[in-house]
Image (cartoon, rainbow, N blue to C red; front, side, top):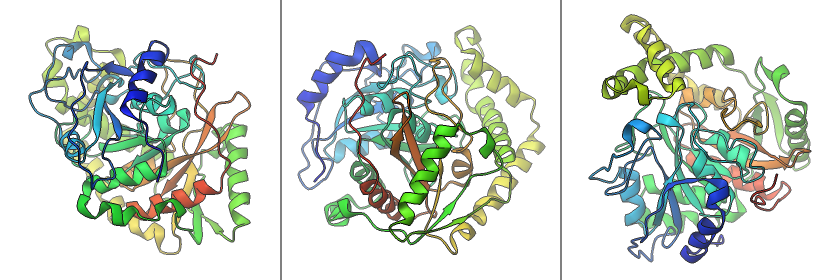
Amino acid sequence: MTHKISLETTLEMITRDESTIKAFSYVPKKQDWCEVLESPLNGVTVAIKDLIDTADWTTTYGSKAFQKNIPKKDAWIVDCLKKSGAIIVGKTVTTEFAWRDAGPTTNPWNVKHTPGGSSSGSAAAVAAGMVDIAVGTHTLGSVIRPASYCGCVGYKPTFDLISREGVYPLSSTLDHVGFLTSSCYWAAATYMLGQDMKSSKDVLKGFDRGEKPLKIGIYRSSQWHWVEDEVKANFDAVVRHLTRFGIAFTCVDLDLDILDITQQAIKTTSYEANQEIYPKVCDRLDEIGPCSLNLMLEGQEITPEAYQALLKTNQKMREHRDDLFQDIDLIMSITSPTTAPEDLSYTGDAMFCTPWTYLGLPTVTIPSGLSRDFLPIGLQLIGQAGCDLKVLKFAQWISNRLPEFKRASVAFE
């Protein structure tokens, strides 16, 4: 059984480190808890990204325009977590509307560096040992990248596996609910939220052993030359290490170049953000951050016909996404071309996360090493659509064979 952080420890860590990490936007004075003994999530401390509705708690979506917003109803994922016996301890900082206007959160490994975005507070809270699980959202790379930068496990489920009801929309085509966790086990426990929770303990029995993949596809893309040498070296070292266990590797590619996929995804997001957010904030644009505003204004330049063409391309690629796995168990790639940048206003490069978001495939990142500056490097693992538990088991098996490192030393500079 994976170690579980107690509520007392969580509150103690928040009290001790929150002034440095700035992971939370709201922590209630009292946490309500409904005990559910048959659930693996019973008594587990969970933080919720401030993009997700929580009844009677301030939910700002990271924006000055919504500082007084208090939803009347919990989002589906929050309600589900409560019914599973999880203890909701507070709301974590998000970039505005889950785009690029950063909040105050710092990286627990080095407070001068970004924790990534948009699930910045969620990643930092887990990395600092405040909670076992934090809920995030992911439109381009907003779970996988911050998890990688902060040295925790990130899990982006298959598109629409987890309901987005009560989650403030950025892009209905690309938005995912995801999770940042202290271990692959807790990521697998969150996967069960979209399944039959009554069978969850049986499903997760023996999970800690994981499952060995036999053949892995390596995705480097046309942009490999932009990747930092340390990140390349770490990735290549993992490949060599896993080869010793009898795993075969082959190179894989996609029908669209990574730059084209990124462009398609950003255009889709900008059009949908303009449709979904702009009407709600058009009378108070002075309260909107420059990145969010620019995204919506760019969306106004895209015609409905061009948008339909974007959707058609996305649909076509998703229809053929299973073809990638005809001869392999898993795809492996980096999470970002760099470790966490030394710039709190810049949340990092999501390019290597975007293809799998665009395809709606389940994705997991696990810590795979540290840079010379003691910043985490993540390994991104991508599975076949709907095979989330399998990719999580693969991730657990690989994680068991990679070097372990301790949690972040908070306030290191």
